[in-house]
Length: 164
Image 1: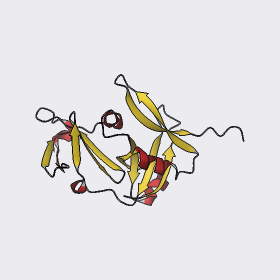
Image 2: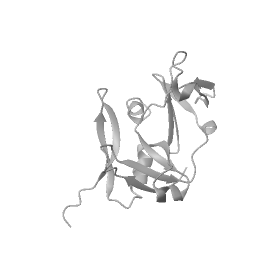
Image 3: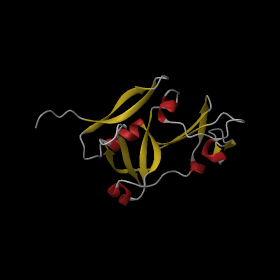
């Protein structure tokens, strides 16, 4: 996966955090990824690309409408996650896998131009920093802590450039 371009949706018309939107040449196929797990969180990292699921086994199978996902562990074991949940970057960051940043991903340049039809995705913090440096905005990623569980997140913020 190579990062080609990026922009920030500042979401100024709503109360949500800004989102980094990233154009990449390709995303790895899940069959190429190797997952590790800790506390029911299954995470794979490949060249800046991150994929994760929350799944603790039997009885934890209501996510993705019960859909099954075949994954391979770092030890080469084939595991079927039945109905895992999608989780979020803050949960990953509280474990040894982070830091990671949830972003919007696209492989089609027209998606970046239109500003919609992205897929949800996650990058390592290093890859997200590389992406934000490609934006037209003077911006950086800032660490914030959210929720009662003190989950760390990195969100885009504008540089303070002073009065021009």
